[in-house]
Image (cartoon, rainbow, N blue to C red; front, side, top):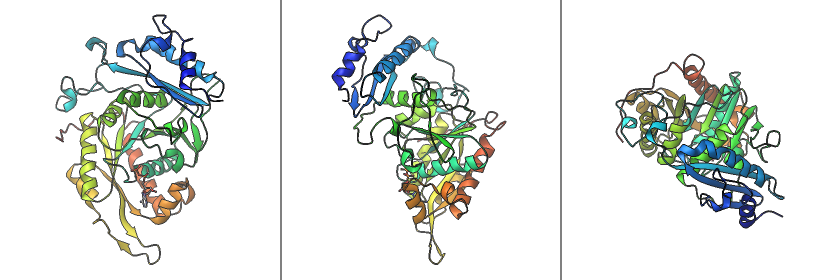
Length: 381
Ligand code: ADP
């Protein structure tokens, strides 16, 4: 028997808000998603009172987890109203020439790293379907092959594909019966995705603050342990949600994935502009589906007039990290949860991904990422 929304609400009547009111009567609960034993909702609070609400959030999670039939639960705190100006932390570095310096625009960037995590990079794209997640997974495996401890965080909450690409099923366990989760693992990577917590078919309406909160929890409420580098698979696009994430996750840099077509490059340009706006260094561009290498005759065809991304990288003064050919086998193995770098390390594609991974690590490894200054270039969008 899995609990209904009403039963979840009833259970929450036993949890007290900071003012002593039963939680279900505070008017701060979002819609409750309760299907198939998985429960998700958010509590909307004032940004300034988050510390008082955090124990309430945890208590709510514990109470619901104890309900019969509940297999996973995620309760998110969302701060819809800005804290008073004096309560805001200063930005990590001033950005006098960027949009971030405008009053009322970008909130300050978070600098707090999850415990044990040494560096976080994002893999982003201006639009969907360009191979961003495939690239993120294979870069993560390339970093693993450098002897690093690697985590991968699927922040693409609208279409989490990392569980599928890494062939991982099941639910994350909690640590010692508490609310913290253990990451899932495969191919030597530690993995967390919203896809482990909600059913793919569960219709979820993600409002901005819920997005942020779900991401923050996957970042901070998960036992990542010692992690040399965490790769975040960002949602595609350059909307508010992406901008907020770029600000809230303490990123050492970002990799932009683009296909060679003009349209995708325009989107990639927007992506670069967005990261620069929040002073996140762009580590470089990867051109995916760059050209077609015929598996039969070995002939190379530049289907999409390849080379656009390299040219664009030069024009925008960002590193060009590499070009990944279009390949049928890559698509098949990737979609079957068998990423090429893990299952066919001797292949040409694996060599390309490993090279991209080392170019990334060269820029964010010890002594480099921290010292690196974000480019002070303003790109108008
Ligand atoms: P995104 O994260 O940008 O939406 P995905 O990584 O999910 O994109 O890739 C979209 C589709 O393209 C998947 O079916 C994937 O297997 C395929 N794909 C990605 N890169 C390549 C490539 N270089 N050659 C062939 N297929 C690819």
